[in-house]
Amino acid sequence: MRIAGIDEAGKGPVIGPMCIGGVLVEKERLFSLKNLGVADSKKLTPKKRRLLAHQIRKYAQKVYIFEVSPFQIDELRKVMSMNQIMVQGFSVVLEELHPDTIYVDAADVNAARFGTNLKAQYAQRFPEKAKELSVVSEHQADAIYPIVSAASIVAKVRRDELIKELEKEIGVDLGSGYPSDPKTRQFLESWSREYGTLPDFVRRSWKTALNVLKET
Image (cartoon, rainbow, N blue to C red):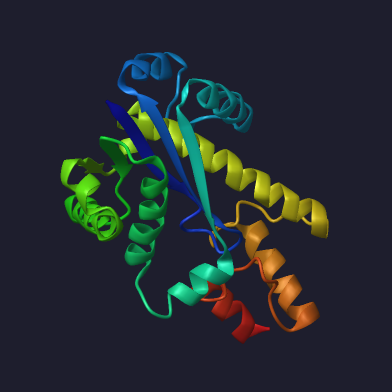
């Protein structure tokens, strides 16, 4: 029995990519995974997340992270909703793992609908596998199921690495990347004033980015 978990990091930020992480383990490995102390990545320190991400890879049969760039998000939002983008992204990870049971942190206000849509998307390419697939889609699954916690951790660690690389490249503290972060907003406003546009690692379809461009 192959069990997998999927979760994302970076759905909401105006800066940087979204990373969707998937972790696949044999059922008998679930207890070992739980004993590592995995938890919702948001409740762990960066150092603890990095340590756990390394350990998770030792126990997992497979770890896969799908990175969706700001440009890809902006382009997809022209033709579909963010919920649909999440289904597409989670499906890419699911298609890499092919578990018997998948646990996902629902990226939709209707958790059951997200699970149904994800399975339907998977069935388009793998109809026979989809018939046997069991999908558990719940809100806050990363705090409930260790396999989703593990996926949350590897996704968050990868996104943090990418943001740090950006900061090193441009020599500026970008903050958390979320629209509510004063550091993030200050960066956007300063860049827009200086260059009259925003860098390609910013999601320009976000209301925050649009407002900054209008105001500067």
